[in-house]
Length: 121
Image (cartoon, rainbow, N blue to C red; front, side, top):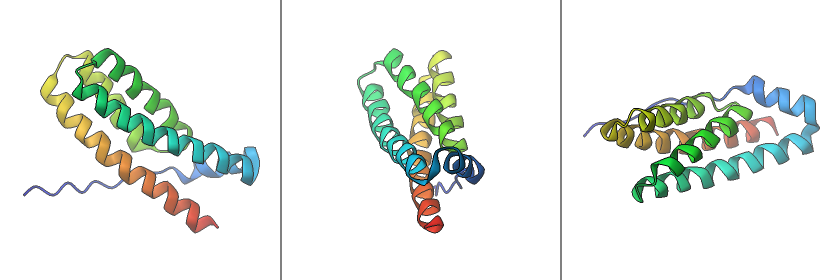
């Protein structure tokens, strides 16, 4: 069995910047909303893939890039970008593999941000 253990990177500077610019309450609101939206978009992107609605899937993955970047989820943004590239290249095998990676990295990234927030409290 192949073990897929990929470390995720969350940019703590991006989070600090949000907290400094928006204050604690504002930053927590932005981060919480972003995390909720990322969870929804990950699920939506997977559903669109299963329904073979690639144009909409691409749009959903592109929105993940922007949201993930906003809260410092560099790996997640990069993998979501890779998903859009696979769609653009019409490569169904690469798309299936990259989507699986997106879901793994997405879950781990959400956990990493929660852990960073807990550590800062």
